Amino acid sequence: MVLGPWWRKNWLRVVVHAAAWVPLVWLAAQYAQGAFLVDPVREMTTFTGKTALILLVLSLACTPISTVTGLKMVVRVRRALGLYALLYASVHFAIFIGLDYGFDLGLLGEAIFEQRFVIVGFAAGVILLLLGITSTRGWQRRLRRNWKRLHRLVYVAAVLAVAHFLWLTKDPQEPLRYAALVAGLLLLRLPPVRRAASRLRRRLASRLERKERREPEAVTAPR
Amino acid sequence: MIGGNVVKIHPSEITPEHIYLSRRRFLKGAAALAAATLAVAACGPEGSGPTAAPTAGPGLVSPSLPAPSAETDELGAALTSYEAITNYNNFYEFTTSKERVADLAKDFRTSPWEVQVGGLAGKPRVFGLEDLLEFEQEERIYRLRCVEAWSMVIPWVGFPLRRLLEEVEPLSGAQYVRFETLVDPEQMPGQERASFSWPYVEGLRLDEAMHDLTLLATGIYGKSLLPQNGAPVRLVVPWKYGFKSIKSIVKIDLVEEMPVSFWMASAPHEYGFYATVNPEVNHPRWSQATERRIGESGRMETLPFNGYAEEVAHLYEGMDLSQWY
Image (cartoon, rainbow over all chains, first blue to last red; front, side, top):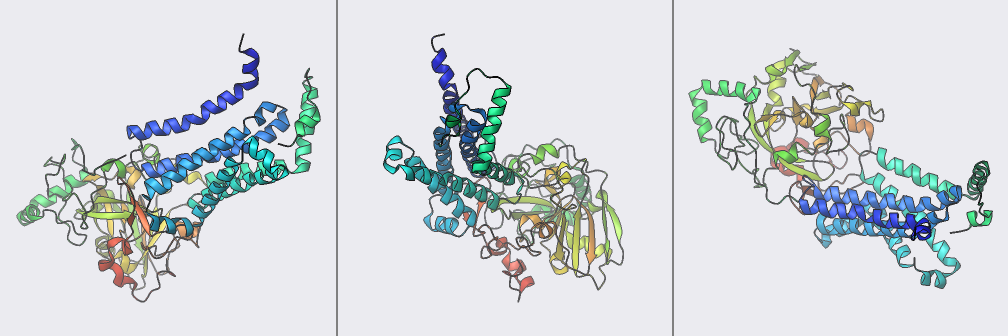
Protein backbone atom coordinates (compact mmCIF):
# COMPACT_ATOMS: atom_id res chain seq x y z
CA MET A 1 0.00 0.00 0.00
CA VAL A 2 1.26 3.45 -0.91
CA LEU A 3 0.11 5.18 2.25
CA GLY A 4 1.34 2.33 4.42
CA PRO A 5 4.38 3.75 6.20
CA TRP A 6 2.94 7.23 6.57
CA TRP A 7 -0.31 5.84 7.94
CA ARG A 8 1.47 3.57 10.39
CA LYS A 9 3.34 6.55 11.77
CA ASN A 10 0.50 9.02 11.84
CA TRP A 11 -2.75 7.15 12.29
CA LEU A 12 -3.16 8.22 15.92
CA ARG A 13 -2.78 11.88 15.00
CA VAL A 14 -5.41 11.54 12.31
CA VAL A 15 -7.76 9.81 14.71
CA VAL A 16 -7.21 12.42 17.43
CA HIS A 17 -7.77 15.36 15.09
CA ALA A 18 -10.87 13.80 13.61
CA ALA A 19 -12.34 12.68 16.92
CA ALA A 20 -11.71 15.96 18.71
CA TRP A 21 -14.08 17.82 16.40
CA VAL A 22 -16.91 15.32 16.80
CA PRO A 23 -18.24 16.75 20.10
CA LEU A 24 -18.29 20.29 18.72
CA VAL A 25 -20.05 19.27 15.51
CA TRP A 26 -22.50 17.21 17.51
CA LEU A 27 -23.16 20.13 19.87
CA ALA A 28 -23.74 22.54 16.99
CA ALA A 29 -26.10 20.09 15.29
CA GLN A 30 -28.06 19.50 18.50
CA TYR A 31 -28.30 23.23 19.09
CA ALA A 32 -29.40 23.93 15.54
CA GLN A 33 -32.11 21.28 15.79
CA GLY A 34 -33.30 22.56 19.14
CA ALA A 35 -32.58 19.15 20.61
CA PHE A 36 -31.69 20.50 24.04
CA LEU A 37 -35.25 20.77 25.11
CA VAL A 38 -35.36 21.84 28.65
CA ASP A 39 -32.24 23.68 29.72
CA PRO A 40 -29.95 24.21 26.73
CA VAL A 41 -27.60 26.55 28.56
CA ARG A 42 -26.87 24.09 31.32
CA GLU A 43 -26.65 21.12 28.97
CA MET A 44 -24.25 22.85 26.63
CA THR A 45 -22.15 24.28 29.45
CA THR A 46 -21.84 20.88 31.08
CA PHE A 47 -21.11 19.16 27.80
CA THR A 48 -18.31 21.48 26.70
CA GLY A 49 -16.83 21.58 30.20
CA LYS A 50 -16.70 17.82 30.47
CA THR A 51 -15.26 17.47 26.99
CA ALA A 52 -12.51 19.95 27.87
CA LEU A 53 -11.72 18.06 31.06
CA ILE A 54 -11.63 14.69 29.31
CA LEU A 55 -9.28 16.05 26.63
CA LEU A 56 -7.06 17.57 29.29
CA VAL A 57 -6.88 14.27 31.17
CA LEU A 58 -6.12 12.43 27.92
CA SER A 59 -3.37 14.92 27.17
CA LEU A 60 -1.90 14.31 30.62
CA ALA A 61 -2.14 10.57 30.10
CA CYS A 62 0.04 10.64 26.97
CA THR A 63 3.39 10.68 28.71
CA PRO A 64 2.63 7.85 31.15
CA ILE A 65 1.05 5.76 28.40
CA SER A 66 4.10 6.20 26.27
CA THR A 67 6.34 5.40 29.23
CA VAL A 68 4.54 2.14 29.87
CA THR A 69 3.94 1.10 26.27
CA GLY A 70 6.98 2.63 24.63
CA LEU A 71 4.79 4.02 21.86
CA LYS A 72 6.26 7.35 20.87
CA MET A 73 3.35 8.31 18.69
CA VAL A 74 1.25 8.77 21.82
CA VAL A 75 3.46 11.65 22.92
CA ARG A 76 3.06 13.19 19.49
CA VAL A 77 -0.65 13.83 20.06
CA ARG A 78 -0.18 15.38 23.49
CA ARG A 79 -0.04 18.97 22.30
CA ALA A 80 -3.03 18.57 20.00
CA LEU A 81 -5.10 17.12 22.86
CA GLY A 82 -4.11 20.03 25.08
CA LEU A 83 -5.06 22.54 22.41
CA TYR A 84 -8.42 20.89 21.88
CA ALA A 85 -8.97 21.06 25.62
CA LEU A 86 -8.35 24.80 25.31
CA LEU A 87 -10.81 25.00 22.41
CA TYR A 88 -13.60 23.36 24.41
CA ALA A 89 -12.78 25.38 27.50
CA SER A 90 -13.11 28.53 25.36
CA VAL A 91 -16.50 27.46 24.00
CA HIS A 92 -17.51 26.61 27.57
CA PHE A 93 -16.51 30.10 28.72
CA ALA A 94 -18.22 31.75 25.75
CA ILE A 95 -21.49 29.97 26.56
CA PHE A 96 -21.15 31.05 30.18
CA ILE A 97 -20.67 34.74 29.49
CA GLY A 98 -22.79 34.98 26.34
CA LEU A 99 -25.72 32.59 26.53
CA ASP A 100 -25.95 32.27 30.30
CA TYR A 101 -25.17 35.80 31.44
CA GLY A 102 -25.95 37.65 28.20
CA PHE A 103 -22.71 39.66 28.53
CA ASP A 104 -24.16 41.45 31.56
CA LEU A 105 -20.94 42.76 33.07
CA GLY A 106 -22.44 43.60 36.44
CA LEU A 107 -23.82 40.09 36.92
CA LEU A 108 -20.70 38.53 35.44
CA GLY A 109 -18.41 40.38 37.83
CA GLU A 110 -20.35 38.98 40.74
CA ALA A 111 -20.61 35.56 39.13
CA ILE A 112 -16.90 35.27 38.44
CA PHE A 113 -15.36 36.74 41.53
CA GLU A 114 -17.79 35.74 44.23
CA GLN A 115 -18.12 32.07 43.49
CA ARG A 116 -15.10 29.95 44.12
CA PHE A 117 -16.00 27.35 41.52
CA VAL A 118 -15.97 30.08 38.88
CA ILE A 119 -12.70 31.54 40.16
CA VAL A 120 -10.87 28.23 39.89
CA GLY A 121 -12.47 27.44 36.54
CA PHE A 122 -11.44 30.83 35.25
CA ALA A 123 -7.88 30.31 36.53
CA ALA A 124 -7.70 26.93 34.83
CA GLY A 125 -8.85 28.56 31.61
CA VAL A 126 -6.22 31.30 31.85
CA ILE A 127 -3.50 28.68 32.35
CA LEU A 128 -4.69 26.69 29.34
CA LEU A 129 -4.70 29.85 27.25
CA LEU A 130 -1.17 30.72 28.32
CA LEU A 131 0.05 27.21 27.56
CA GLY A 132 -1.80 27.25 24.25
CA ILE A 133 -0.11 30.46 23.17
CA THR A 134 3.34 29.19 24.16
CA SER A 135 2.84 25.75 22.66
CA THR A 136 4.64 26.59 19.41
CA ARG A 137 8.19 25.62 18.52
CA GLY A 138 9.13 29.30 18.48
CA TRP A 139 8.12 29.75 22.10
CA GLN A 140 9.75 26.47 23.00
CA ARG A 141 13.03 27.86 21.65
CA ARG A 142 12.60 31.27 23.19
CA LEU A 143 11.80 29.98 26.67
CA ARG A 144 14.33 27.14 26.62
CA ARG A 145 14.39 25.43 30.02
CA ASN A 146 11.65 27.64 31.35
CA TRP A 147 9.27 26.27 28.75
CA LYS A 148 9.18 22.92 30.47
CA ARG A 149 8.69 24.54 33.84
CA LEU A 150 5.92 26.71 32.48
CA HIS A 151 4.16 23.76 30.91
CA ARG A 152 4.13 21.82 34.14
CA LEU A 153 1.34 24.27 35.01
CA VAL A 154 -0.92 21.95 33.04
CA TYR A 155 -1.17 19.85 36.19
CA VAL A 156 -2.30 22.91 38.13
CA ALA A 157 -4.91 23.52 35.45
CA ALA A 158 -6.14 19.95 35.75
CA VAL A 159 -6.41 20.17 39.53
CA LEU A 160 -8.25 23.49 39.24
CA ALA A 161 -10.59 22.06 36.62
CA VAL A 162 -11.49 19.17 38.90
CA ALA A 163 -12.00 21.55 41.83
CA HIS A 164 -14.25 23.64 39.55
CA PHE A 165 -16.37 20.58 38.79
CA LEU A 166 -16.40 19.42 42.40
CA TRP A 167 -17.43 22.80 43.77
CA LEU A 168 -20.29 23.43 41.42
CA THR A 169 -22.14 20.18 41.92
CA LYS A 170 -24.42 18.88 44.64
CA ASP A 171 -23.32 15.34 43.98
CA PRO A 172 -19.55 14.76 44.20
CA GLN A 173 -19.49 11.26 42.72
CA GLU A 174 -18.63 12.13 39.14
CA PRO A 175 -16.05 14.87 39.79
CA LEU A 176 -14.37 12.57 42.32
CA ARG A 177 -13.77 10.09 39.52
CA TYR A 178 -11.90 12.76 37.60
CA ALA A 179 -10.07 13.73 40.78
CA ALA A 180 -8.87 10.13 41.12
CA LEU A 181 -7.73 10.10 37.49
CA VAL A 182 -5.78 13.34 37.80
CA ALA A 183 -4.28 12.23 41.12
CA GLY A 184 -3.22 8.97 39.49
CA LEU A 185 -1.62 10.79 36.57
CA LEU A 186 0.19 13.15 38.94
CA LEU A 187 1.44 10.16 40.88
CA LEU A 188 2.82 8.66 37.70
CA ARG A 189 4.95 11.76 37.25
CA LEU A 190 6.85 11.10 40.48
CA PRO A 191 10.38 9.92 39.55
CA PRO A 192 10.30 6.63 41.51
CA VAL A 193 6.91 5.72 40.06
CA ARG A 194 8.09 6.69 36.63
CA ARG A 195 11.18 4.55 36.88
CA ALA A 196 9.08 1.63 38.08
CA ALA A 197 6.75 2.14 35.12
CA SER A 198 9.54 2.03 32.59
CA ARG A 199 11.00 -1.05 34.31
CA LEU A 200 7.61 -2.63 34.02
CA ARG A 201 7.54 -1.78 30.34
CA ARG A 202 10.95 -3.33 29.75
CA ARG A 203 9.94 -6.47 31.54
CA LEU A 204 6.75 -6.70 29.50
CA ALA A 205 8.69 -6.04 26.37
CA SER A 206 11.20 -8.78 27.01
CA ARG A 207 8.46 -11.16 27.96
CA LEU A 208 6.75 -10.52 24.67
CA GLU A 209 10.12 -10.97 22.99
CA ARG A 210 9.68 -8.00 20.80
CA LYS A 211 12.04 -7.82 17.89
CA GLU A 212 12.62 -4.12 18.02
CA ARG A 213 13.41 -2.85 21.46
CA ARG A 214 13.65 0.81 22.09
CA GLU A 215 16.46 2.39 24.03
CA PRO A 216 15.54 3.12 27.66
CA GLU A 217 16.63 6.75 27.19
CA ALA A 218 14.00 7.22 24.54
CA VAL A 219 11.38 5.84 26.82
CA THR A 220 12.09 8.02 29.80
CA ALA A 221 12.99 11.03 27.70
CA PRO A 222 11.51 14.25 29.06
CA ARG A 223 8.60 15.64 27.20
CA MET B 1 -33.70 26.49 22.12
CA ILE B 2 -37.16 27.08 23.35
CA GLY B 3 -38.61 30.34 22.22
CA GLY B 4 -41.98 31.45 23.45
CA ASN B 5 -43.75 29.88 26.32
CA VAL B 6 -47.16 29.19 24.99
CA VAL B 7 -48.58 26.22 26.80
CA LYS B 8 -49.09 23.37 24.41
CA ILE B 9 -50.77 20.40 25.99
CA HIS B 10 -52.72 17.89 24.06
CA PRO B 11 -55.85 17.23 26.00
CA SER B 12 -55.71 13.71 27.30
CA GLU B 13 -58.46 11.29 26.43
CA ILE B 14 -58.72 10.23 30.03
CA THR B 15 -59.77 12.43 32.89
CA PRO B 16 -57.39 11.76 35.77
CA GLU B 17 -59.11 10.00 38.61
CA HIS B 18 -58.58 12.69 41.17
CA ILE B 19 -59.95 15.35 38.89
CA TYR B 20 -62.88 13.11 38.13
CA LEU B 21 -63.53 12.78 41.85
CA SER B 22 -63.14 16.47 42.49
CA ARG B 23 -65.41 17.24 39.57
CA ARG B 24 -68.13 15.04 40.97
CA ARG B 25 -67.94 16.84 44.26
CA PHE B 26 -67.82 20.11 42.43
CA LEU B 27 -70.88 19.41 40.37
CA LYS B 28 -72.95 18.73 43.47
CA GLY B 29 -73.15 22.38 44.35
CA ALA B 30 -74.70 24.93 42.06
CA ALA B 31 -72.97 27.64 44.05
CA ALA B 32 -69.63 26.06 43.35
CA LEU B 33 -70.53 25.96 39.70
CA ALA B 34 -71.33 29.64 39.68
CA ALA B 35 -68.11 30.41 41.49
CA ALA B 36 -66.20 28.37 38.96
CA THR B 37 -67.57 30.22 36.00
CA LEU B 38 -66.53 33.45 37.62
CA ALA B 39 -63.09 32.23 38.49
CA VAL B 40 -61.26 33.40 35.43
CA ALA B 41 -57.57 33.98 35.82
CA ALA B 42 -57.89 34.01 39.58
CA CYS B 43 -54.45 32.61 40.00
CA GLY B 44 -53.01 34.44 42.96
CA PRO B 45 -51.43 32.11 45.45
CA GLU B 46 -54.01 33.07 48.04
CA GLY B 47 -57.05 33.14 45.87
CA SER B 48 -56.85 30.28 43.44
CA GLY B 49 -59.94 29.40 41.55
CA PRO B 50 -61.30 25.86 41.63
CA THR B 51 -59.47 23.44 39.42
CA ALA B 52 -62.51 22.65 37.39
CA ALA B 53 -62.82 26.06 35.85
CA PRO B 54 -62.07 25.44 32.22
CA THR B 55 -60.43 28.39 30.54
CA ALA B 56 -59.89 28.24 26.84
CA GLY B 57 -56.18 28.70 26.48
CA PRO B 58 -54.29 27.75 23.35
CA GLY B 59 -54.38 24.01 22.97
CA LEU B 60 -56.28 23.69 26.21
CA VAL B 61 -59.84 23.67 25.12
CA SER B 62 -61.14 20.36 26.35
CA PRO B 63 -64.01 21.08 28.71
CA SER B 64 -63.44 17.73 30.43
CA LEU B 65 -59.93 18.66 31.48
CA PRO B 66 -59.31 21.40 33.95
CA ALA B 67 -56.95 23.66 32.08
CA PRO B 68 -54.73 26.01 34.03
CA SER B 69 -56.85 28.98 34.97
CA ALA B 70 -54.20 31.33 33.62
CA GLU B 71 -51.20 31.26 31.37
CA THR B 72 -49.00 33.17 33.78
CA ASP B 73 -48.33 33.45 37.47
CA GLU B 74 -49.51 36.51 39.40
CA LEU B 75 -46.31 38.33 38.40
CA GLY B 76 -47.03 37.80 34.72
CA ALA B 77 -44.41 35.07 34.19
CA ALA B 78 -45.40 32.42 31.66
CA LEU B 79 -46.05 28.86 32.75
CA THR B 80 -43.22 26.43 32.09
CA SER B 81 -44.15 23.82 29.50
CA TYR B 82 -45.51 20.46 30.67
CA GLU B 83 -42.77 18.83 28.65
CA ALA B 84 -40.04 20.67 30.58
CA ILE B 85 -41.68 20.11 33.96
CA THR B 86 -41.91 16.37 33.34
CA ASN B 87 -38.47 15.89 31.78
CA TYR B 88 -36.17 17.91 33.97
CA ASN B 89 -36.24 16.59 37.50
CA ASN B 90 -34.06 16.43 40.54
CA PHE B 91 -35.13 13.16 42.11
CA TYR B 92 -32.03 11.44 43.48
CA GLU B 93 -34.05 8.36 44.46
CA PHE B 94 -33.89 7.46 40.77
CA THR B 95 -30.77 9.14 39.47
CA THR B 96 -28.80 12.34 39.80
CA SER B 97 -29.27 13.01 36.08
CA LYS B 98 -32.18 15.41 35.62
CA GLU B 99 -32.89 14.20 32.12
CA ARG B 100 -33.01 10.50 33.02
CA VAL B 101 -35.47 10.57 35.92
CA ALA B 102 -38.55 10.45 33.70
CA ASP B 103 -37.44 7.25 32.01
CA LEU B 104 -36.23 5.49 35.16
CA ALA B 105 -39.40 6.39 37.04
CA LYS B 106 -41.92 5.46 34.38
CA ASP B 107 -42.88 2.13 35.98
CA PHE B 108 -42.96 3.45 39.52
CA ARG B 109 -46.04 2.08 41.32
CA THR B 110 -48.14 4.85 42.82
CA SER B 111 -51.20 2.78 43.57
CA PRO B 112 -52.02 1.51 46.09
CA TRP B 113 -50.42 4.24 48.17
CA GLU B 114 -50.69 5.10 51.82
CA VAL B 115 -49.52 8.05 53.84
CA GLN B 116 -49.16 7.53 57.59
CA VAL B 117 -49.96 10.73 59.40
CA GLY B 118 -49.19 10.71 63.09
CA GLY B 119 -46.68 11.60 65.73
CA LEU B 120 -47.99 14.17 68.19
CA ALA B 121 -51.49 13.97 66.82
CA GLY B 122 -54.81 13.49 68.58
CA LYS B 123 -56.20 11.40 65.74
CA PRO B 124 -53.35 9.78 63.86
CA ARG B 125 -54.47 7.87 60.82
CA VAL B 126 -53.42 6.34 57.56
CA PHE B 127 -54.64 8.09 54.44
CA GLY B 128 -54.96 6.15 51.23
CA LEU B 129 -54.46 8.08 48.05
CA GLU B 130 -58.22 8.05 47.52
CA ASP B 131 -58.65 9.68 50.94
CA LEU B 132 -56.23 12.43 49.99
CA LEU B 133 -58.15 13.04 46.80
CA GLU B 134 -61.29 13.53 48.89
CA PHE B 135 -59.86 16.87 50.01
CA GLU B 136 -61.06 19.56 47.66
CA GLN B 137 -58.40 19.89 44.98
CA GLU B 138 -57.52 23.32 43.68
CA GLU B 139 -55.06 24.83 41.28
CA ARG B 140 -52.07 26.85 42.46
CA ILE B 141 -49.66 28.47 40.05
CA TYR B 142 -46.33 28.68 41.87
CA ARG B 143 -42.76 29.54 40.99
CA LEU B 144 -40.34 26.75 41.84
CA ARG B 145 -36.80 27.93 42.56
CA CYS B 146 -34.15 25.23 42.71
CA VAL B 147 -31.11 25.73 44.93
CA GLU B 148 -29.08 25.15 41.74
CA ALA B 149 -30.33 28.55 40.51
CA TRP B 150 -32.88 27.53 37.90
CA SER B 151 -36.61 27.96 38.17
CA MET B 152 -39.97 27.07 36.67
CA VAL B 153 -43.57 28.25 36.91
CA ILE B 154 -45.83 25.30 37.60
CA PRO B 155 -49.62 24.99 37.73
CA TRP B 156 -50.02 22.52 40.57
CA VAL B 157 -53.18 20.76 41.61
CA GLY B 158 -53.56 19.89 45.26
CA PHE B 159 -54.80 21.07 48.62
CA PRO B 160 -53.31 22.96 51.54
CA LEU B 161 -51.36 20.74 53.92
CA ARG B 162 -53.15 22.53 56.73
CA ARG B 163 -56.37 20.69 55.95
CA LEU B 164 -54.72 17.32 56.36
CA LEU B 165 -53.01 18.34 59.59
CA GLU B 166 -56.27 19.67 61.02
CA GLU B 167 -57.83 16.24 60.39
CA VAL B 168 -55.31 14.54 62.66
CA GLU B 169 -55.49 17.28 65.32
CA PRO B 170 -51.95 18.32 66.25
CA LEU B 171 -51.24 18.13 69.99
CA SER B 172 -49.89 21.13 71.84
CA GLY B 173 -46.34 19.73 71.94
CA ALA B 174 -46.11 19.58 68.16
CA GLN B 175 -43.65 22.20 66.91
CA TYR B 176 -42.51 20.77 63.59
CA VAL B 177 -43.71 18.49 60.82
CA ARG B 178 -41.47 15.76 59.49
CA PHE B 179 -41.95 14.18 56.05
CA GLU B 180 -40.53 11.00 54.60
CA THR B 181 -40.28 9.67 51.05
CA LEU B 182 -40.81 6.01 50.21
CA VAL B 183 -37.78 3.73 50.51
CA ASP B 184 -37.82 1.04 47.86
CA PRO B 185 -34.44 0.51 46.19
CA GLU B 186 -35.96 -2.01 43.79
CA GLN B 187 -38.08 0.69 42.27
CA MET B 188 -35.77 3.57 43.10
CA PRO B 189 -32.29 2.54 41.99
CA GLY B 190 -30.70 5.75 43.26
CA GLN B 191 -31.38 4.58 46.80
CA GLU B 192 -28.75 1.90 46.41
CA ARG B 193 -26.15 4.62 46.65
CA ALA B 194 -24.79 4.46 50.15
CA SER B 195 -23.28 7.94 50.00
CA PHE B 196 -26.67 9.37 50.90
CA SER B 197 -28.73 8.41 53.91
CA TRP B 198 -32.19 7.33 52.84
CA PRO B 199 -35.05 7.91 53.28
CA TYR B 200 -35.30 11.46 52.02
CA VAL B 201 -36.52 13.49 54.97
CA GLU B 202 -37.79 17.03 55.06
CA GLY B 203 -39.34 19.23 57.67
CA LEU B 204 -41.26 22.42 58.28
CA ARG B 205 -41.98 24.44 61.36
CA LEU B 206 -45.65 23.97 62.28
CA ASP B 207 -46.60 27.54 61.34
CA GLU B 208 -44.92 27.09 57.94
CA ALA B 209 -46.77 23.83 57.47
CA MET B 210 -50.08 25.48 58.39
CA HIS B 211 -49.54 28.39 56.00
CA ASP B 212 -52.08 28.59 53.21
CA LEU B 213 -49.39 28.56 50.52
CA THR B 214 -48.05 25.19 51.67
CA LEU B 215 -49.55 22.62 49.36
CA LEU B 216 -49.82 18.86 49.13
CA ALA B 217 -49.79 18.43 45.37
CA THR B 218 -51.41 15.57 43.50
CA GLY B 219 -51.30 16.96 39.99
CA ILE B 220 -49.74 19.30 37.45
CA TYR B 221 -51.56 20.98 34.55
CA GLY B 222 -54.74 19.28 35.62
CA LYS B 223 -53.23 15.81 35.23
CA SER B 224 -52.24 13.38 37.95
CA LEU B 225 -48.63 13.79 39.02
CA LEU B 226 -46.18 11.69 37.07
CA PRO B 227 -43.63 9.65 39.05
CA GLN B 228 -40.76 11.98 38.10
CA ASN B 229 -42.61 14.86 39.74
CA GLY B 230 -43.17 12.99 43.00
CA ALA B 231 -46.32 10.99 42.42
CA PRO B 232 -48.71 10.33 43.89
CA VAL B 233 -48.39 13.06 46.51
CA ARG B 234 -45.69 15.61 47.24
CA LEU B 235 -45.13 18.78 49.16
CA VAL B 236 -44.85 22.20 47.53
CA VAL B 237 -43.44 25.09 49.56
CA PRO B 238 -43.01 27.83 46.98
CA TRP B 239 -40.97 30.30 49.06
CA LYS B 240 -38.27 27.73 49.83
CA TYR B 241 -35.71 26.08 47.59
CA GLY B 242 -37.06 23.15 45.65
CA PHE B 243 -35.38 20.47 47.73
CA LYS B 244 -37.74 21.30 50.62
CA SER B 245 -40.68 20.16 48.49
CA ILE B 246 -40.31 16.45 49.25
CA LYS B 247 -41.71 13.94 46.77
CA SER B 248 -43.62 10.64 46.95
CA ILE B 249 -44.48 11.05 50.63
CA VAL B 250 -45.33 8.00 52.75
CA LYS B 251 -45.08 9.45 56.24
CA ILE B 252 -45.95 12.73 57.90
CA ASP B 253 -45.26 13.16 61.60
CA LEU B 254 -45.96 15.99 63.97
CA VAL B 255 -42.88 16.27 66.16
CA GLU B 256 -41.43 18.37 68.95
CA GLU B 257 -37.83 18.67 67.72
CA MET B 258 -36.57 20.22 64.50
CA PRO B 259 -36.15 17.31 62.07
CA VAL B 260 -32.80 16.76 60.39
CA SER B 261 -33.47 16.82 56.68
CA PHE B 262 -31.78 14.71 54.01
CA TRP B 263 -29.64 17.60 52.82
CA MET B 264 -28.81 18.82 56.32
CA ALA B 265 -27.48 15.35 57.07
CA SER B 266 -25.61 15.18 53.78
CA ALA B 267 -23.91 18.61 53.90
CA PRO B 268 -24.75 20.43 57.14
CA HIS B 269 -22.79 23.61 56.41
CA GLU B 270 -24.42 23.97 52.99
CA TYR B 271 -28.06 23.20 53.60
CA GLY B 272 -30.03 24.45 56.55
CA PHE B 273 -33.50 23.68 57.84
CA TYR B 274 -35.23 26.82 56.63
CA ALA B 275 -33.83 27.12 53.09
CA THR B 276 -35.97 30.11 52.18
CA VAL B 277 -35.23 31.56 48.76
CA ASN B 278 -32.94 34.49 49.47
CA PRO B 279 -30.85 36.35 46.87
CA GLU B 280 -28.85 37.94 49.71
CA VAL B 281 -27.68 34.68 51.22
CA ASN B 282 -25.50 32.70 48.87
CA HIS B 283 -25.00 29.00 48.97
CA PRO B 284 -21.46 28.54 50.36
CA ARG B 285 -20.26 27.55 46.90
CA TRP B 286 -22.40 29.56 44.52
CA SER B 287 -24.45 32.72 44.20
CA GLN B 288 -28.22 32.83 44.65
CA ALA B 289 -28.61 36.34 43.27
CA THR B 290 -29.94 35.29 39.89
CA GLU B 291 -31.70 32.36 38.30
CA ARG B 292 -32.36 30.87 34.89
CA ARG B 293 -36.03 30.42 34.11
CA ILE B 294 -36.36 27.16 32.24
CA GLY B 295 -37.55 27.77 28.69
CA GLU B 296 -36.24 31.31 28.59
CA SER B 297 -32.86 32.73 27.73
CA GLY B 298 -30.71 34.86 29.97
CA ARG B 299 -30.99 35.35 33.69
CA MET B 300 -33.41 37.05 36.00
CA GLU B 301 -32.93 38.38 39.49
CA THR B 302 -34.07 36.11 42.28
CA LEU B 303 -36.77 37.57 44.51
CA PRO B 304 -36.71 37.41 48.30
CA PHE B 305 -38.86 34.47 49.40
CA ASN B 306 -39.21 33.69 45.69
CA GLY B 307 -41.68 36.54 45.34
CA TYR B 308 -43.91 35.46 48.24
CA ALA B 309 -42.45 37.87 50.82
CA GLU B 310 -45.77 39.57 51.40
CA GLU B 311 -47.37 36.30 52.39
CA VAL B 312 -44.58 34.68 54.40
CA ALA B 313 -41.96 37.22 55.55
CA HIS B 314 -43.77 37.64 58.88
CA LEU B 315 -43.04 34.01 59.73
CA TYR B 316 -39.37 34.90 60.08
CA GLU B 317 -39.56 38.20 61.89
CA GLY B 318 -36.63 38.65 64.23
CA MET B 319 -34.74 35.75 62.66
CA ASP B 320 -31.39 36.29 60.97
CA LEU B 321 -31.92 34.31 57.80
CA SER B 322 -28.20 34.33 57.00
CA GLN B 323 -27.84 32.27 60.17
CA TRP B 324 -30.97 30.21 59.59
CA TYR B 325 -30.30 29.47 55.94
